[in-house]
Image (cartoon, rainbow, N blue to C red; front, top):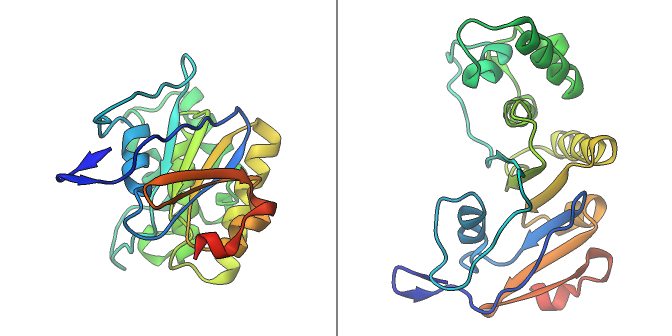
Length: 207
């Protein structure tokens, strides 16, 4: 893949199995964001191709974004942003179910501006889950969160994986967190790709 006339990576070959939990690792500039943009259809590879299984839907949870304290929408209203203005009973039921599954029911009417960082990230996750994705991409989603919020978010991701078979791709620099919750890893370095079971990750190679 060439980006801005610079070779980012080449000869990458990997697959994500249904229901897998994979950490996407590598130093800054290695191409993690480029891979995510390709997977989400925002960039076309300059060579080669990739494809998802038929009818696969992709959900996306971004890196922590601070929302102004006076942001007016409630957590519920924020999650509902991509739903029709006039919501059917089916949509309302779906929203209520997702609020419950992401542990946001009790604070659903709290303004996003007043929510903690972890609560905001769970709201982004809930918003992504509305489309009933088969794979969720967590793009540095735990960065800037406190340790408790990180654990809460990742425990929730693990629950969704185990209960619904959700495939997870987690981009992170937090190796201990990735080792705790992920099963596999993809490591970008020196323009290439290493992959395997995260329990066997060679930390010296990563550094």
